[in-house]
Structures are given as C-alpha cells and as structure tokens.
Length: 76
Image 1 (cartoon, rainbow, N blue to C red):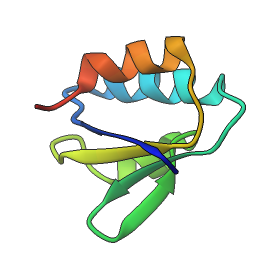
Image 2: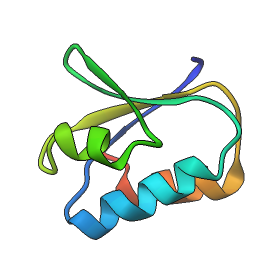
Image 3: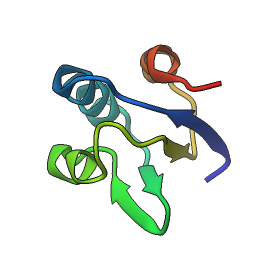
Image 4: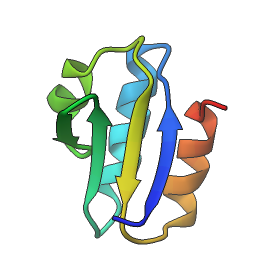
C-alpha cells in the first residue's frame, strides 16, 4: 500500500458514504486503527473501529472519486 491518509468520521452516514465509495474501487483499501486492520469495503469492519477514532486509510491505486470522498474526512 503506497497511499495513506488520516481520517475521522462524525456520523454513521459518513461511514456509509465512505464504504460505498470504497466498494466502487477495484483495488484493496485498508482502514487501520492501532494494530487493527479492516477491509474498507466492510461496513461492519469500519464501524467496529469506532466513529470517534482517528483512522488511517491505506490504498494501492488511485481513484479520483474515492480520493474526493476521503478528503471530506481528512484530519490535519
């Protein structure tokens, strides 16, 4: 995985939007919190990491639509 971004969700709807965008990508996307790594295409997996936590998204390829969605949740 070469691209990484730190994100944080505020609502359950944010998670749904993120997972929907991830499922439209034809490459692997991981969401990481501490030592836990889940598939970004798994809504239950992403929810299990918690809404209030700062998460790291790691992905191997580029997709403009997905990266625009990521930008909405980016943490400085």
